[in-house]
Image (cartoon, rainbow, N blue to C red; front, side, top):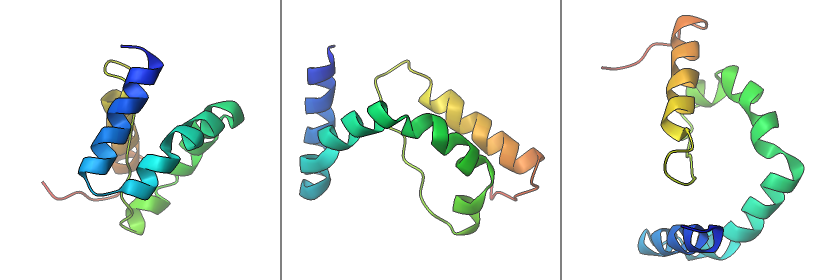
Length: 89
């Protein structure tokens, strides 16, 4: 699956979730994020746990097999072990 097909798939899902504005802005936002290195700069911010304390949702988008689940599990583990953030099981 090429980048265009993946982008089309995400845009279709966003429209199905009734998020037309996000669908329209998605491709430009992802292009800018890659160009400016948002993912690399965002990781330290996620590890401070502020989003969890504010109960802010964390969304991960990408192609299958790129490590989204692994990355989010690692962030969650760090927040639990290092910061002592409690989770409901």
